[in-house]
Image (cartoon, rainbow, N blue to C red; front, side, top):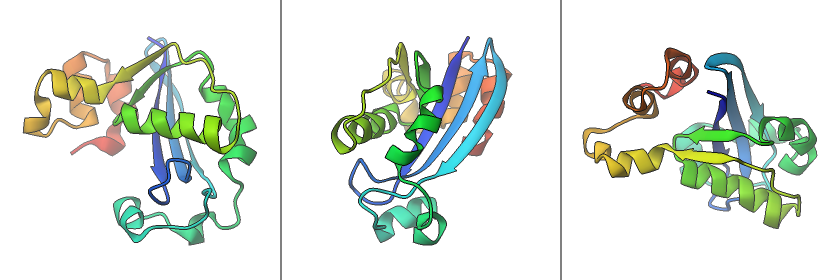
Length: 154
């Protein structure tokens, strides 16, 4: 199984205000790499509610490049990929909005989006507080994915 697990954080309520991207790359069931990028958000301001959620503020991003400027380096993770995300509806909409509307960049071909949030709804796991880590166990994904998602453990 080949896929990437992604997690975007935004600086404010604007979907294009990406301030952080985490990615774990799994090829043939083996975790082959993880990366994290701080990104100067567009628009460049932080809402206190977002900062409370993720702890990222202007001090970590003010001297960095925007998503558009970093996209040539980030694009390699997304072409022809299966994506797994804790909240795929949010993360994929952030990516699409940022590329399509904010920066007028073509959206990469994403062969499949595995929606862990769909799994939560379908099997009513939200009632028991299913986390990304537990969802990977429930879905039968191997321990490599579990290791990649350790940051999301309860």
